[in-house]
Image (cartoon, rainbow, N blue to C red; front, top):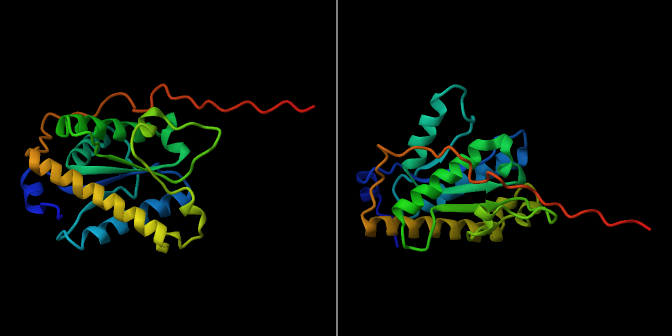
Length: 212
């Protein structure tokens, strides 16, 4: 299958994928987001002319304009790949939760009744004593936590490549579903939700065992 690129553009879509990631001072997180963006574009390029993946490398600017920029780029995206480290769900990175809530809302409108969401979680770190938020665990996610331990060139491993191909297949599936439903981007009246998808999420760490 190939993504109907011309139809997507005519329907108001600009990006095949929006990369959502927590802008933190962590080379691990930054490099993962960059590599995922690059690999998705490379895999899409096999069947799609000029694939576009939105990646905000500079972070959300100050002032009121960031919400309009976020609204525009998210709404014009077919899917969203979320780079999920534990900090992604933290209230200090509320925009991550807003991006998730926004794409979840768009999925509800565009893919109603299809049993699929346009949010694709990619988990790069899991803590055994911290359960995932329901918003994440309720979706089919890709666990890269073991892949990330394979050294700095993890993105060249077969396991990483297989998972990226599966993510691209999911993007392909969602794009085709949108085309079959004639689901327009319809961004004129879309607004970013005011509440994070992770509002109310609290880490429930297991208590340390008593020592005798």
